[in-house]
Length: 77
Image 1 (spheres, rainbow, N blue to C red):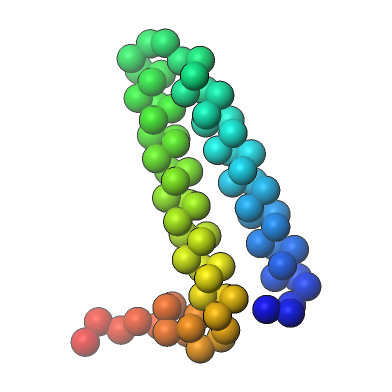
Image 2: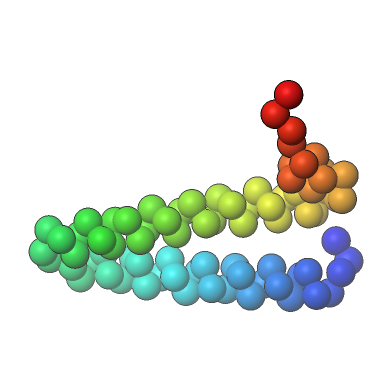
């Protein structure tokens, strides 16, 4: 993965995920009502899903183009 633009993009995405996760952590510690607790739990669950998506995609990019094609071009046969 020598493409400078891809590394920059990945760093930006990871930074945004870190910021969002930090905000979710703070909100989870401060919320008190049942409704707000559920909303923040939903936000944190979505953030964890995004971490997984970015992690899987990043690993496939680091492993090379063939891995990315196999990951993204799965046909249901």
